[in-house]
Length: 351
Image 1 (tube, rainbow, N blue to C red):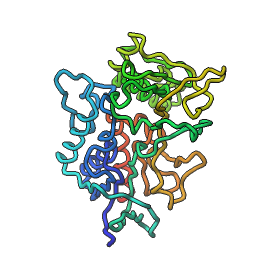
Image 2: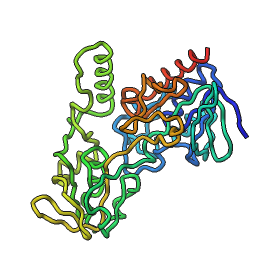
Image 3: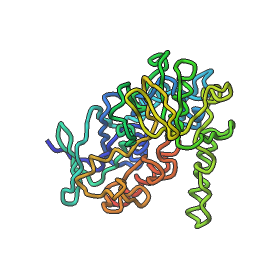
């Protein structure tokens, strides 16, 4: 069975919900197809201790402030899930959970979205599937020969799972720092990074980062010199657990190893360390396989965009994948602006 709607939004996490909010405000008929069985997007799969970088009020989607939780200035992932579930219900967004999209195809003047339970034909599609479902593992020599446990950050849950074990955490970004801090004192920890971690000043949180990203966007739009944005400040936000471990000397990094062995890792100078587990905090790639039939992906796997609109297909918008789909668009507070712009463009195209 093929159904018809004006817009199909693929993905019911924070980006898809923000898109739905603005489409609803413009009176545009739409449906949201979400592969997750329940509301909350990728946040429902985060590790137990994960905290936002910003207070609740500065981590909100358009139209609805995230309520604070007493005694917790930085909300945890469970609080975000509850907020997104409430947001979906409050605005009566038509989200179909458990609807995995397999492909988007051109179908004359429309786009056809195929799922396991049938198809949808729409005048426009917003792809908001994020990156969480595509964890990246680097091609490190010896990775296949390591006999211990290997997992990406998406599979990490709590430090007690590794209590007393020898663990190598790989990655110098926020995920690497937070998981290393979580394990410090529970496991025999090695934190391997390609360069020394660059901690942001302790008073810098998501509020400051959003202001810096906004200032960079305005400078670029005005033709002024690129300020470097958030990357110019550092790589790791010193959230309280990271700061605690760092200040007590529990969070020290070492250079990246050359290869993995059957029982651990080896560094360029011949130093070796045995390990029971390696946790890869090495980032993600955009989840875009459902767009393969459109033939839009470039050599780096990305789709060229003008704002959120795909350069090669004006009926397709991409939302929430990173700065290439809008400054800070992969954040709760940042996605609202790009979602609004995408909805307005779709309204103008339809008109």
